[in-house]
Image 1 (cartoon, rainbow, N blue to C red):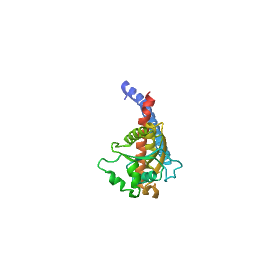
Image 2 (image 1 turned 120 degrees about the vertical axis):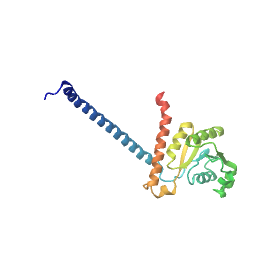
Image 3 (image 1 turned 180 degrees about the vertical axis):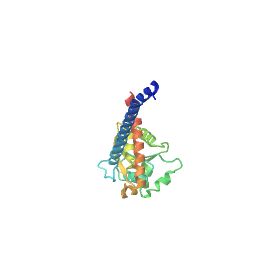
Image 4 (image 1 turned 60 degrees about the horizontal axis):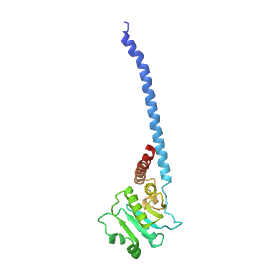
Length: 215
């Protein structure tokens, strides 16, 4: 039985279409592989930029800012203030229902420093807000240098947001390392925390760079 002309045309066209489909699949696989490789490499670099331990400051600053949200952040910041590392301390991101007395009780031995030299910001609800309020506070006081206190895993994103808002101010990181991060970085909850923070960091950097790329 002889094949019709339409059957011959369909058979001849299936080969090129199948080849194009295979090429598209291969290209897509290569693109996805490159994206995953870049994402994984970026995560590795992010982990290298997360300070593994607390540091000894080499210099003082005009002011100190602590971003709330993690264990020991405020206590460490008050310690820095009491030891004369800065003239004033901003605690940014304080819950509206948290009283000054509750915060002061975290370090009762430094009550004098808290009473004279601590400012509370209750308006910031995220890291962007922290940076905005820090900018306002620092410029109002004419500060040209700040010690930044936050958790070590949060430090890369916090510094990126603050540098974006405060390019004219010297920022000195003081990372606070939680006990679970001191113990191990390889357990599931810790890696999930670090990975989530990495994703937030990527989003923040992309948001800050996009206007420059579109200009």
